Amino acid sequence: MCHKPYNTISSFMLFTHVLVSEVDLPTCGQRVYIDPSNYNDPEEALRNFAKELDKRWLKLEKVIGGGEFGDVYKGTLKRPGENTIPVAIKTLKQGSTSKNRGDFLSEASVMGQFCDPNVIFLEGVVSKTHPLMIVTEFMSNGSLDNFLKKMDSKLSLIQLMGMARGIASGMKYLSEMNFVHRDLAARNILVTETLVCKVADFGLSRELEDSAYETSGGKIPVRWTAPEAIKYRKFSTSSDVWSYGILLWETFSFAERPYWDWSNFEVMDRVETGYRLPPPMSCPKVIHQIMLECWDADRTKRPSFALIVKQLDSLIRSPEKLKDNQSVIQSKPNIDYSEITTVEEWLGSIKMGQYTEHFKQAGYRDLQTIAESEEPDLDGLGVKLIGHKNKIRKSIREVKGKLKRETSLPV
Image (cartoon, rainbow, N blue to C red):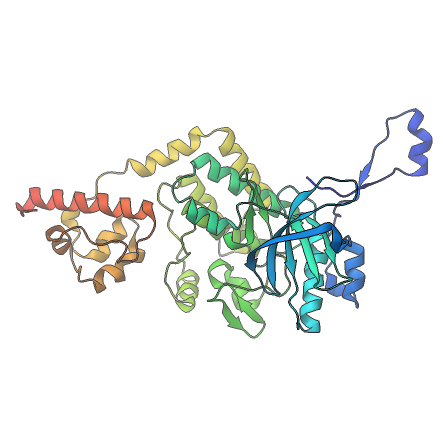
């Protein structure tokens, strides 16, 4: 819910109030995003888009993270005459440059323009005293990537669908305001106690992932970024849609790293030549199809966020479509291991090819080695996700059983 006050109606509407019921017009948010950099003075932009809070209304309880500018705290906000509410408080560290201050204020000026159930809500700022603070609603489950890792394989398909739908809805709202996020990823989505996902991180100078690719125009998170944005810095709603496809993959893989341990250059090269991420384990085929549509090389052919919301709504209303697609994946014919000899072919056949090098380095060269060996230490081979472990273990059992029958190999 958005908490900003409403404007009263015009004098004309007041005059006609005897004929029609009064209609309050919300001032929360606006129709088109205005870049704070259009203002010569960031303080002016802040006054236009963010409420000033008295620091005496705030209580900082504990540090819950760190960001580009300083620490992030969990705390409470108690406005006069209102109930106490939990909030997150971002602070600007001492000794920050004037540019840091400007970027900090600009981030608040960006957030202050948005009012949507799936976009993080700005309660206000403290800009007249030190330290400077940005105060937002508190999201108890933290960032989506950390939450998914913690809940690996514990969330239902419909829960994942609902979370993905919420993110798409938030991006639909932002795209309709002509706002381009540029860094849409699970790490920049926040999750409420009730699993509502909200788009966050609108800093104009973001702290990107460690392996962000440095270009002449700044750092780019390659694994989430559309090819045209990497090559030509053409960021648009269409490039955000590409990023959403990667985020969707993160969601259904429980925050596995996109493109695994590939280097940035390998990611760029493989994507440019047509490679696309395979479906995560147990991901419905129809969901992977949405991902593939988001990753169309022609940005004009990618779906809009409005269409993605519509597609997900349809699937949530008719979950049998998800089951049908899942059963297609799960009921594939048994793999003919007699036609597979190398570990690379084997892992590729079960869509676990990202672990090939780990197996090779551990001495597993062919199916014969797999069949003759004890079950490998999957943690030591870099397989951390429970779902991936189960899939590989099941396949190893099938390999052993198949080769035992065909070659009478003692297992």
